[in-house]
Amino acid sequence: MISFSSLQSSTNLISPAQLQSLSLRSNFHQTNLNQLRICFRHRRRLRGGDLVIRNVDATQPYDYEAKLSDRHGSFAKLKIGIIGFGNFGQFLAKTLVRQGHTVLAHSRSNYSLIAGKLGVSFFSDPNDLCEEHPEVVVLCTSILSTESVLRMLPFQRLRRSTLFVDVLSVKEFPRSLFLQILPPYFDILCTHPMFGPESGKNGWTGLPFVYDKVRIGEHEVRVKRCEDFVDVFRREGCRMVEMSCAEHDRYAAGTQFITHMMGRALEKLNLEDTPINTKGYESLLTLVENTSKDSFELFYGLFLYNKNAMEQLERMDFAFEMVKRQLFGNLHGLLRSQLFDGSEMKYKVEEERKLLSDSSLNDSEFASSSESKTVEKN
Ligand code: NAP
Image (cartoon, rainbow, N blue to C red; front, side, top):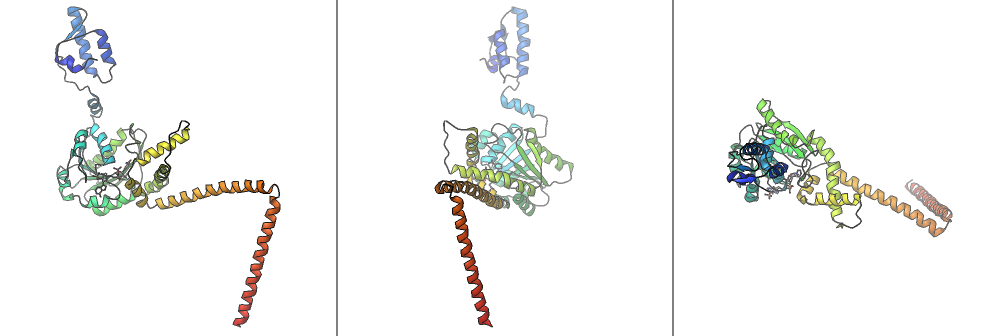
């Protein structure tokens, strides 16, 4: 395949067939092709046949990344600081960078190399990140460490109108932390992208994005900045769901926590990939795969910081017990009828009669003993 740079930098011969093959390449920029076609027509008039290209003076972007940023060229670009550059922070950063936003990051561990590869500026010291004055600060730390991380941020180095966002998988907890700890002049947006590096690896189309505009200043600049951030997800095709943090937690305990709990429990069974996997079994394997790659800290956070999770855990226990009882109840009935070969009814009646006579004996004993006690008292 002929590369456009080689066509640009030297004198090359290109046939109409090669030109056709270039047009089939998905990453070959249309403008470049048009220029080649013009040149080709021009040369054919001069020489008839092959095309000679001499340094086509076109510095057009033609690679994939550039094409995508072209597509995203028309909207506001934000300066976004990510605090907590682990699994999810990096996942989010890839899309932010692709959309053309300026992304800064800080984390407890040193992620300079990874950040460099992603096009993110990494700051080991949060003071340095804050002095860059990001318009938006996104908290991507583990649920358990959120409070300590938030308390160590040097708020005084940020602009007074900074928008604070979180992406925690529980929502009431960060909402009350933000309201409690952040200075009143910062805006607050609580969000939960309900997908991650596994479930969102093939794009975010149709995946739910939950958000709650907890405290956004009335000034149009603040309102627009919040919208611009939410648009990051809208633009990727997410299913946008605006709901209160409390409502989110109620639903999430009944959906997300149960999903993670089942995935973790199934993981303990070491399920095998077999030659006779059914579709249902395949979905169990996928569930294990999707949930087991998340840190245990994340799962523990879902349990500890969602007040509805414990109730769901108890319901699951109860449901498991009920299904077991149903199975064993049926099994007992079957075994009994086999063991007693039709005389089961007789057996049952005798059992019940015995039970009744025992209880009546107990009752009368109880009655007589209480009578005697009354007499003694008198
Ligand atoms: P995680 O285990 O929940 O969090 C890892 C992040 O927390 C890393 O950046 C880590 O920093 C930081 N961290 C942990 N303990 C810390 C401490 N004591 N002090 C400072 N930083 C600490 O895994 P995650 O998947 O990256 O999730 C991050 C957040 O995104 C969580 O709140 C989670 O609920 C949310 N979220 C995750 C997903 C998902 O699919 N994974 C989806 C939606 C939302 P270092 O790496 O520098 O140690």
